[in-house]
Image (cartoon, rainbow, N blue to C red; front, side):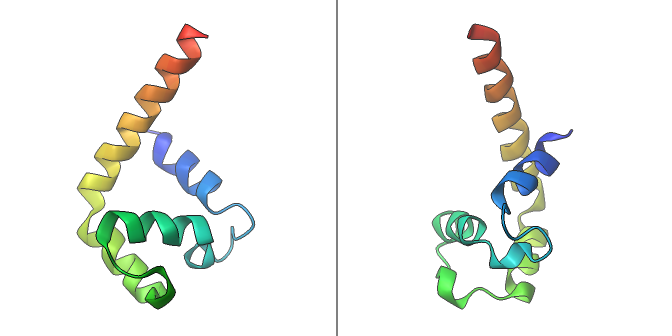
Length: 74
């Protein structure tokens, strides 16, 4: 269950105290939702995260599984 925290930690590098300003996080939201990254605000990012919370948790769990599998094979 640490995958979501690890992703947020890595995705907000350089913007730990203001994650909504992270270019990487904005880009990921743009590619997933289709909303323009330039128009994203704090409230729109939280609204997106809340509305998509189960899909996001499922995705982050999957990425954790992929990471573990890659480490095991190398």
